Image 1 (tube, one colour):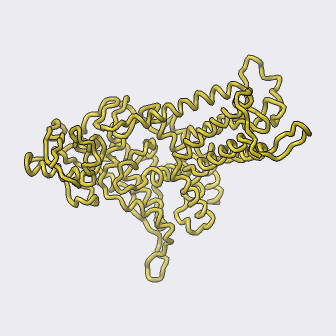
Image 2: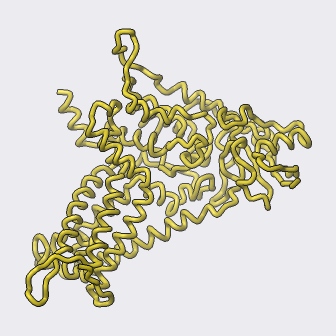
Image 3: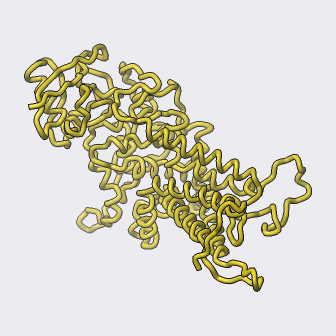
Length: 247
Length: 267
């Protein structure tokens, strides 16, 4: 049985350092398995969030070898094992202890986004009829498991700490799911421009790269929203045509 | 977004990261690739010669509005002073350059490669301040769709150039005859790749169908949206291929015109 070295971040409320552990690994193990093994055998007080171990709950988000990843979906054989594997908490959120972070800021952001506002039911039974084609486009966004890895890798939050100004890719996806929904009637474009500051996104696509659900965040959610904001606020011809249409 | 204040891990310094792979390769490739193209295209634009060979016209000079007897509006006007550098490319090259400069793919790529904002995902940045695209000057990136309209018109001109590149002067009769040279194929490949890049543009995707929530009600727009989406899925690949081929097209015409390369006739 092989052994591998891990450097786990140990500390509380941002104060701490990496501590190196060595543990036995077997074929098929993921980073979370190794971390839980270290917790069971060597560091009983190690704080680490996890739940489903299947990449569906979004609890075990952390930074493995410097990249935001779900620990339960990162197989050890995908990592170089000649050097210690580093595991640290997400840097875009306050550290609570060891690998656990306080992601509650995200829930506050979500509450501020205008909720789904469907049009009047158009079927006799009081329900709606939608075309599959129209729903397919927003269906992708519903795969989000709210692991917040995209928020963590976004440099606007991670490096510039602009949590007061920017809602981050996760909530741009959420806003896109509502804004592009065939039944929704609300208009969130002004909020997206002024409050959510979609203009802060500079399309580096890091969010798309780290998404464990492979949601095409930048191309299918953020850029379409940016284009809608351009329609509404920056395109003089479009604005003129809209005025004309209203008459 | 929330009034809650909290303490975060301190920002990492420029280039600092725990990533173990060679994360710098991609931004370096972009820096060298885009940098080389900008240097070459600027040099080529200033040359104002060797941009025609037989029926071929370099895409850097197409359409030729002013400059030679083949130009739409004739030779360089006398009122342009001699000390002022003039090239037919100056009149048109700003449009495709603007299209690429404001392209969503290239923006993300050159912000990383040239401005290190960020240098790569999860890698420390050199500056602590950040304005993004919500303020001047980067708010001007929103003009992309207007450059798209121009790029679509340029595609038609370039397609016409391919047609022109099918008709060669017969030296013995002096008349024109149908033919295909290597240059014809290169100019056709240029239109193919530029077409793939332009027609897969994010703005076009939005204008053709992305702006509509119930696109199923518009069959033509739905079909168009699917086609643009298909090209858009590989926008990066189209962007680089078209950049290389448009540059190579100019190199080919230039070197043939200078007598360094020989244009092979296939038909």
